[in-house]
Image (tube, rainbow, N blue to C red; front, side, top):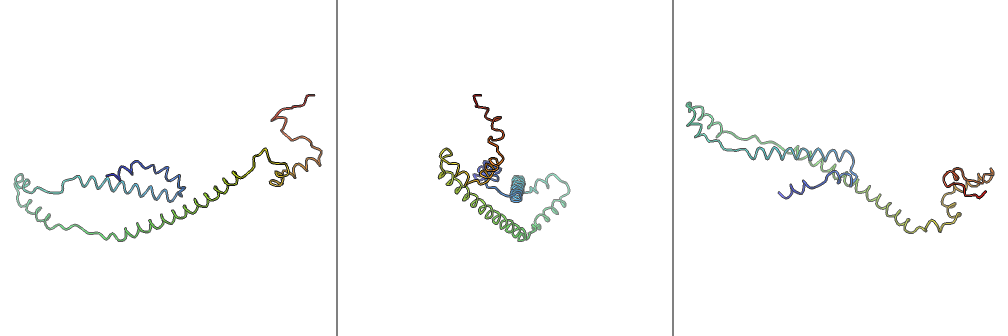
Amino acid sequence: MASKAVAATVDFARIYSSLGLGKETVAALQAFRKRHADAQRIHSQLASQPTTVDLEHYRSVLRNKAVVDEAEKILRDFKPVTYDVNAHIKAIETFEAKAVAHAKETTEKIDAELKDLQATLANIEEARPFEDLTSEEVGKAHPRIVEAVETMLKKGKWTVPGYKEKFGDLSLM
């Protein structure tokens, strides 16, 4: 009973998005959860139905006792059909193997992304503040800035396009 309460409180949508599962994996899990919920619902409906037949009641109500005797004989001789569930078990095992493979693949992707994020975070923490950088260091980091400045100097442009529109004109004249 406790497992039903736990399953009802789990936010599967958040789990799917936080784990970064693929569309196929999410669809397969949702289909499995739907089949499981349907099976539980049908089981609870069938479990709540009475399983015994009161033949004495029918003998007292019906005039034709032969019908009741025949029904009793059929019920006594009834043997439930057994099903070979090995094919279903193999399908479940195949699904489980695919789910585990997708989970491992997702874990590897998440681990690689986490490693990259940790390296980026370490780089950010070790970096000097922007105010302490020199123009030479910025030029080394982004050579295209140096190229753009050199091109502007060769053409005789001493102002940056869009600077006055963004920051205004600070000249006193």
